[in-house]
Length: 83
Image 1: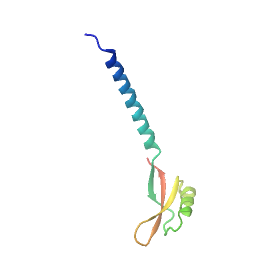
Image 2: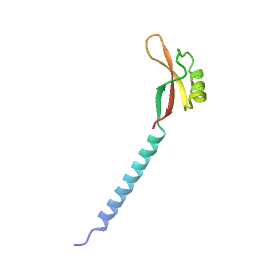
Image 3: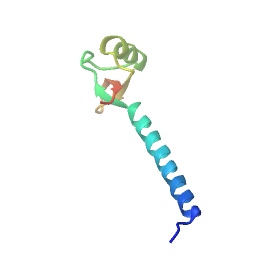
Image 4: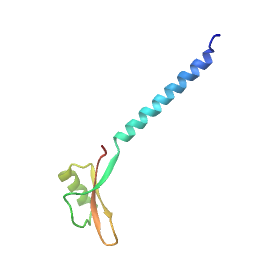
């Protein structure tokens, strides 16, 4: 019994779509940033711009930002590439 060319074409089209979607998913995960509390800046953080500068210069992070950790304190968190 001969296979239909429509079935072969459909199968190849679906396979191509799957490969394109899976390759895009992998690239998106590679550029993801993970947040970690700053190791160098242990005190309270008041200005995100200063935190960003210190994270980049002193810890080699992509960026930094102040986040509220509890009611009264803000801490500097650095964003590094996820491993």
